[in-house]
Length: 126
Figure 1: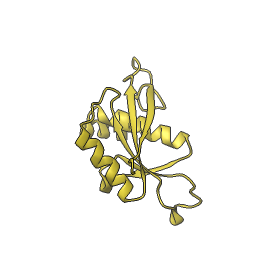
Figure 2 (figure 1 turned 90 degrees about the vertical axis):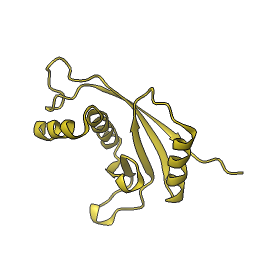
Figure 3 (figure 1 turned 180 degrees about the vertical axis):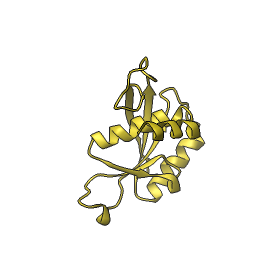
């Protein structure tokens, strides 16, 4: 696991730890996260999964951002409209990772504690 985390950090920098924290949070909530790349998100989630061979429609698109991220109106509109267009709900995971906790291992990979707050945004229609 440590080699995968090291490679992820090489490729994505500090963003990797935030994404890993959100992935773990989703798994702990019994959601099955898969890549959301083709939707411009970090993850898409499946909630009621019986088998991987028979996945239901995914319910959410999840984008990982820092808690102090400032959304432009255009950026927010694009994310929400895209999610609605593919029958999903847009969720922003506002994530803070404390970093490497003083050399102690966290789940064996050196990733520190994280605080993940999810914010769901929907489209208002008249």
